[in-house]
Length: 334
Image (cartoon, rainbow, N blue to C red; front, top):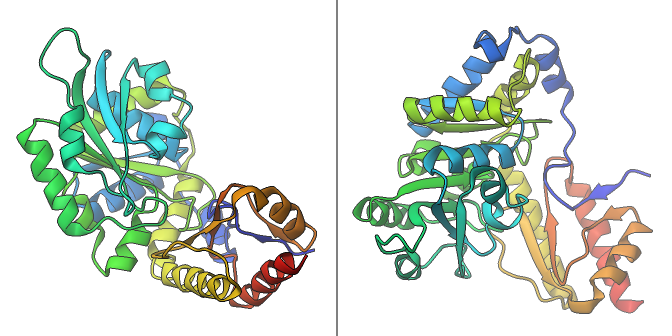
């Protein structure tokens, strides 16, 4: 059975053309800084973001961890949203490995952080408290895009309070195509940006952390420390380069597919949050586990949750929309 996997946009398979690019990659030892394909990827993405340098790493979790550890010292603190990936879904790495205290704050419905609430969370200059050093934003956040005007406001806010500003841009290019802007329009507001290649862009592995040269030099040392140094990594970097060259604008197709699914679910009577990019959130309450099992028997893979997330990606095709909606309709009748 050909499964329709709606759990995440991390499940995509590399295309034939991407595999060919990987096969033909020129490689070297990246720990020695000698892999030309890795260097090309790092330099290319940093330039797109308007930042000085980049660092290729195995995962977005490692990229965020290196950013937090490069911005903060032991006993420092970062502020992030209560539902932010860098706070909630990365195994407490900053606290465990960096001795960095997280300070979560409640998030707004649009994925932003109320900057007045952030201001109230910043610690006084007093030895009783951890030193607040960094604000972390995420874009997209649960599929929602942070407006450029908000990013400018956040940049001014952190400058005034002498905080660094990091972007978990795991799905940054979903925001780029939704806003119709450039990556630099987003990246210029931040001291550092992490971009995942293995989500909607369709590469099998990897993220790139970008920032100033001194910041990336520090992050490179930390990468070695946490075991992220790779050798002939150009094979993987080539997939990232291919994705950036060929698979950015097609993200609009994922967004359209998500809109189509959401519209159909609303017509069936489901409670669905407004869709901006490639994520559909459905209020399933205590029916989520039953729905997961029901869909599984029909070749549709979900992650059960009361606030059910359906994620479209390059392997969710136009012809999949109808069977997805038919299955949700059948579930209601069952």
